[in-house]
Length: 387
Image (cartoon, rainbow, N blue to C red; front, side):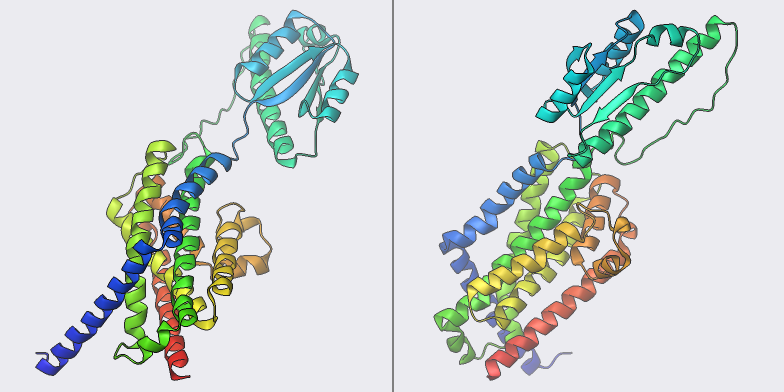
């Protein structure tokens, strides 16, 4: 049984936390800048990144120099354009036209079909098809060459099969038939959108709370709080609770955009999404409070919060750049980036829906991180009050 005095103290503490939360909530709804950051920025970021960040390269512009001008070469050109990989801008007989178009940036790849192509293929001889690639766009060049290799491997298989059948031979081949789970079409948008959600929560949560305590010190209202019975942990909890609600609202908002606008599959449960988002947001909110309690004004606190959350979330979380290809020292740094763990959780919830067993270690890390950040922020608050 808890003594009555202990119950009264707990009740009084909850009352002070509630009063602090109500005060912060009133400030949020009266401050247009805070409302814009909390409600407008998530929509802007999900639309901007959702449409702009897409690593799927289709309809690569090519030029074709057909020096053979045969039915076989025309069939090859037709099949090359039948899919969505390539889009022929022109067909010419002069190879210099390809080089001029590459210089002008009109095409990314120039394909040269040599004279005698049909005749040599009919005899079963090898034919070399030339490809001139614009290397100034490295990504398009690599993807384009991969597409070309895949196309000609498929085309060669059909030619060989036809040649063997015409000559009365039987050819047995080993075929690989992959079965891709969770993202059958390998659309980059399916794993990019969860990363955008991570970025939104990390940046906006830290940004909002980085202004909270610093604003109190700038306006002199922190001295008034110090003179009241409100304790440091009660100030921290009172200020963070309204922003937790905002973070949950942001999660629901961007998830609706992801599922209904960008057609991202959602295989997990909404409860898992909200709980994991709340855990991650609590750590990010704690970071913002820590920055605002250390620095003396809103502008430096906001700048530090942006740098400390946006850059790691973009570059060290496996969002844009694969961690496996990073140098060992950088890979070691990624182990302390919370966005990396939350991204694993979101991709599991959205694409796999395998439940908590698929990301229990990530939950453990975020629990430890959130506890440490909030503890340091509280102790820093006590230190500032004592001084």
